[in-house]
Image (cartoon, rainbow, N blue to C red; front, top):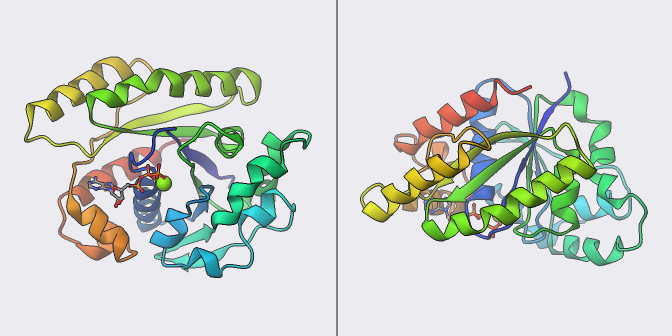
Length: 252
Ligand SMILES: Nc1ncnc2c1ncn2[C@@H]1O[C@H](COP(=O)(O)OP(=O)(O)OP(=O)(O)O)[C@@H](O)[C@H]1O
Ligand SMILES: [Mg+2]
């Protein structure tokens, strides 16, 4: 096997990249897939949501990417593996400024372990810096979470330009796994119209996957450091996450 590697990417902050990475990963694991989550955000929300204290970690993705040490992996957390990060990763941008072919570092780091997994899911930071570029270069696919609001569509041109640039310059094989409208509020006409606009404008670029509703249990689950499915097994959004995982499971 060689892992389908998906970058969860959007340069906008707080659109549910991390929440989706963890929950889609969980439901892929539930389907019997071997899953590695890679935290590439110095804010390290994914590492936190998965139950770790980032500041207490000695070895993280910083050491892998900057010091070129072997990747550190924590095993079998809710059925998934995790390559953690912490705030020290924020130094990578500066420390790699002069490094030749630095955008290849993540791809190279994953080379040796790619055969151990069905899926590698990369949680990108909310920026267009080197960490996001590295992720798009290492990825076979990009999945774009987008907040279901009118203002979210404004940022998509910038997002798509970055993806196109990486496609042309560094990774001609990168495919768009899909667009996930997040924090959808179907009770308001604003929410409905925004979802309609996302469907109309973005389905040209990639499959628009099931919309994830706005629900406080997502925040509660991440605060309790669990996938939604383990926090509230009866939550209606679980079915949608399972649908997304099922579609992701067909990617190759
Ligand atoms: N569907 C949802 N409904 C309500 N709250 C949500 C939903 N999904 C995520 N959240 C909450 O919104 C906040 C932002 O989510 P998350 O951290 O996943 O976004 P992000 O895109 O990774 O953010 P960042 O850009 O800072 O990395 C978190 O507190 C999370 O618990
Ligand atoms: Mg995040």
